[in-house]
Amino acid sequence: MKYVVVGGAGFIGSNIVDKLIEQNHEVVIIDNLSTGKMENVNPKASIEYIDISDTKECLSMTEFMKGADSVFLLAAKARVQPSIENPVEYEQNNTIGTLNVLKSASDAGVRRVVYSASSSAYGNTDKLPSVESDPVNPMSPYGAQKYYGEVMCKMFSEVYGLETVSLRYFNIYGERQNVGGAYAMVIGIFVDQLLNGKPMTIRGNGEQRRDFTYVGDVVNANILASQSENVGKGEVINIGNGDNRSINELADMIGGDIVNIAPVIEPRETLANNSKAEELLGWKPTQNIEEWIPKYKKDMGLDV
Image 1 (spheres, helix red, strand yellow):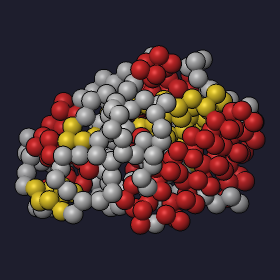
Image 2: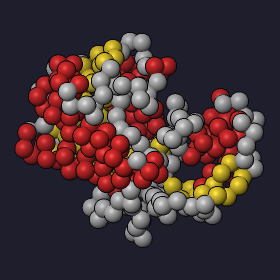
Image 3: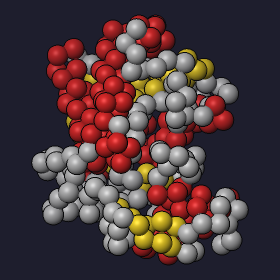
């Protein structure tokens, strides 16, 4: 079967590509390598270099999607803080880009789009764990843009008949995560700092808590979401580990010196209720971060 992975050279997307190739599917990657890397690209997949934020470039995307059963839409400019600093740039990629992909998929006759949404849509909330019916309260352009993508997916299902499902990810970690630059996640940042002989920088007091979710579990959720007969009408589904750790606890797991720096605008805590994922997709997380960190440290050349 043919699948298209938009953002297939990136962290999560490349892991999805590998799983699909392992299952003997034909895979087309669409990526402009703005944040993705050629070293992540599975040689058994084909790649088309398209900037999804450029509507003219996207005219060719429909052709590459023809014959595909499903499209996995992962391409986005990620991270909360950079979106606050560059809201217009993020808007073009995360909003116009999402619309262009949905339109191309619809025009190509694709059956389903699996959209990578974000728990950033919840913002700050005193009601935890978060369930999909909770009010949204994004605290950043990124959170608002990812929520807009969910709305667009549901609209495309209702108006154009394109099956869609949106997966709200919680703080993903795992193989191929960025360790440097504006798009690096906290685990990668910590390890990169230690490898360079620097202390780990913790924003604020470090008591903010995150639901760290393993990329392999996210891959499985995507595959299930593309196949399940229980979804396809714009459903929104949490994909998290269902427990959380403070940034201080994470730093303790990794080990090393720390320094506290000025806080930024961010939620105090994230925590997923996964009941809907279990009910509709038959999905459960399998990996805890405590089990993964020692292996990652060894792979990155840090003493265990």
